[in-house]
Image (cartoon, rainbow, N blue to C red; front, top):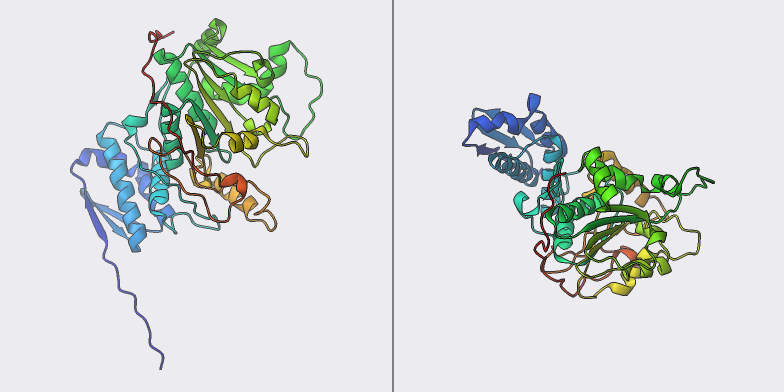
Length: 393
């Protein structure tokens, strides 16, 4: 007669909150925040008075308790809580404890290492909104942007590589730490041939620069953006226009860097001038260069790894903050037969320089493009603003 194993029934976890006025905000309209936690973690939440009972497996229940505690602390600091903040808290907790059941379906959970800072430490204030990290990879990225003169942000679409860099550059500009914010992209078509484009030079290149304008419009009013561009405080230009320039007293961002050639990338990196910061963002899985042409982004990573003052931060699928389906789509592409060895590593964990930014480890079995060693050197400490703060325009 075979023995039958009986799993012990785990008692619900009880959480008490000391301010009943915050509970409607914590639970959300029609308890939608609680429903999201239940859906993501597979637990059951029931509220009574100022208490919430959490029923579920041990790790899942612990994660739900950590999530509710994090969101409640955020409300006590006067911050807003809605579904995006709930999702952000779940991502942070998932990557911190490696919860295997935090994401349902076929998506592989990839852990990113790091220690979360408080919201206030990593807030970026712009004219229209306050930008904060929503994953551990984004936290490491913002820490690197503040402490290093040259930062590479590498990873899949939707991880905030460009958006966070634009927000940080704009905050440097508004604080007077730099005189200009310069944004650039290579004018490479995504697998299409658009042919002749009518209009003057700006009208010809603007379609390629549209994602950069979109990020700026999210942080400035249209009138403010036009005024900054007219004064030359914000410049948006294709990569071809960078040759021969020295970019001093500026925060410079190169987007879609995977579509540069090795020669273009070397040219761009050597534009860095006095009191300047530079950010290079790209996704090695979306290269639109002709077949046989080496990506300048990969070439640069191979060249500058270990250089003092440089930080390389790698994002993972766990850092995707767009629609949840985007992360599952990326996982589906990566897991197709015959793709694992060929595709660059969007599933590799985030990396950044030690000390200032969070430590990271490479995913086992990832390709060489996704597993370079962490940067050995440390960058210069963040500079205090060296110029007058800019008045509100």
